[in-house]
Structure formats: C-alpha cells, structure tokens
Image (cartoon, rainbow, N blue to C red):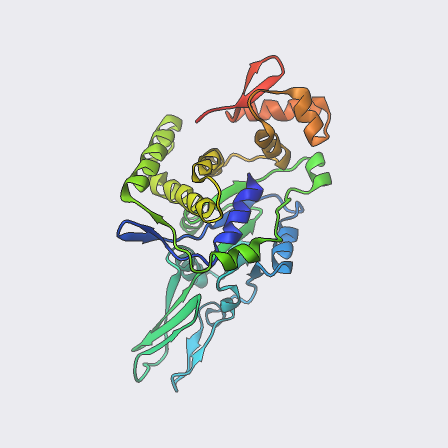
Length: 330
C-alpha cells in the first residue's frame, strides 16, 4: 500500500491538471511520510534521487526556490527547476525557513507562487518552459512549476502551517519493528517510472461532473460513518480521484483506488502501521488462514498473530472464524 502510493506520487509528477467538467485540479499526488528517525527515510530519498526521479532541495533561499529577475529583464532561474516534471524531496518541513513555507505550500497546491521584486520591470516579461514558467510585471513575479512532493519527517507538527502541509498530502504514518528493520520498509519498483512518465507526458485525465460527485458522496458517507470532520471531504475525494487518474492512464482498474481509502483516512487520524502490517493486509485474498499469512511473509506464526491483532484493533481486517481472516469492507 505505502509503496503503491509513493510509486503513484512519482509517476504523477509531469501530468497535466485533471479536468472535471469545466474545472481543474492538480494531478500530482503529494506525500507526507512520517516515520521515526533511523528507519530509512533518507535512504528512500537517496534511492529516488539515484534513479533520477526527484531532487532534494537543500538550498533554502527565495532566489533558489522561486528565482528572480535582473534589472535588465534577464531571468534568474531558481535551482528548484531541476525538480520540474519530477518530484521535490524535502527531508523536514521544519528545516524550511519560515518565510519560505507559505510559498512552498502554494507551489504544492496551486503550483504557483509569487514574490516581490525590489524594482519595477520596464515591461512585462514571460518565459515558458515545458514544466515551469516565469511571469514578471511591475514589481512582482510569478513562478509556476509542475512537480509532485515527498516530505519525509520524524515529527508531524501542530501549527497552522503544519496543518496546511497535511492538507496538501496523503499522510503515511509508519512505525517499524525488528522484523521490519531486517527487510527495510520500502520495496518500490523504480525501474519503469521514467518510461511511464515519458508515455504519460502529454496525457490529461478527464472526469465527468457526475463521476466527481459519486466519489465525493462515497467519501462523505465514509467520513460520516467514522465521525471524521467534513472539512476533509474535498481533500480525500481529490486524492482518490488522483489515484484513479493514475490507474486509468497506466491501464489499471480505476475502481481499485478505493482500496487506499482506509490508509488515507488512517493517515488523517494519525494511525500508524508497520510495513509488515501493510503486507499482511495486502496479502489477504478472500479468507486467508493465519499459517498462510506467516508462510508468505516468512515470519513466525506467533509474530503474524500479533500483527493480525493490531490490524483487527485498527478495524482493517476481521476474524471470520478461528485463525481465518479477511479484509473489512468499507
């Protein structure tokens, strides 16, 4: 599950906005990855960089993030354009200087941010590249960039800006046990993502208004049943639609996007999972005996039983009869 969502985030980077009747939403899937220190978050970021799928921003200045204009009208491109059409990697949101957090949050949601120049340009300036653009007029400039974002952190904050960050992301809360540390918590297939990005480069997803309303209404019923605030309706519905869009574009069944709803909602609620708990949930097919679960993951029956008990407590699976388990329906 976690691996799938991270993979979809990486694939989504260059996509054009999703059309919903006569309106649009961003197609990019953003992730807030919350995991304890020492559990491999930095290694995951390094692997994404190694495969040339994203870049880590470390130079946090206004010019590096948004660019600038010289008095002669020449554009100074920001360093962040290395992430255009790819994935922006951020190790800790708290490491971003306070004055740059709002522009960054604007880029994550609206894919644009503005900055004030210390002079007026003599005439409007426009520069358009494939995944980024700059427009300057009078004493202001606007920078646009099409990218997805992965923010890895060991601590989710509680300030207003932290909540704004969470509203722009699918939040994945990961814990680890000793068995998880043996295996590593990420097993993402990277090798075909560049090829998929190239294939989808000029694609734009489209949904009818009625399709969007069906997704929204289903999400509303799910939030109501779990007593989750209606404030999350738009956010969750849009993320489900983004996953549907990716799955359609790569030839998968879009209705399978609903299987990620539980994890999206548990992220909102702050619930955490170990990678092995996620693998158990994924391995359940119909009614699965405990011994088959343990055998498929190469762990002891006792340890798999402990993980099963945790998943039952979280409401993701149920015990049909003694030592036989199935996924909970929505």
